[in-house]
Length: 104
Image (cartoon, rainbow, N blue to C red; front, top):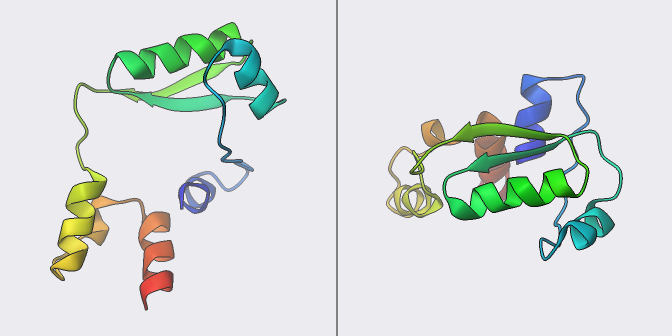
C-alpha cells in the first residue's frame, strides 16, 4: 500500500518497505542493509528513538512529519469500513486501491 502510494506520488522512486530489527543500530543495519534513505514519522518518544537509531546506524533519515497525535487511525478506518461509511478519503490513494482490490 505504501509502495503504491509513494510510486504514484514520485514515479522515479523505487521504494522498498521492509521489516527491520530496532534493538540496536547494529541489528537495524543488519536487517535493512544498504539503502539511500530511511523515511519515518515521529509522533512520540518512540518515533524519536527510531530516528536516533537509524542515524546511529549511519543512514540518512528523512522525517516525513512530526505530530503529537495521528490525524487518522487504522481503528477509525476499519470502523468506517465495517459500517459501510466513507473511509477511502482518509488514506492514501494507493492504500484505498489495495484494500478495494482485496475486498471487491
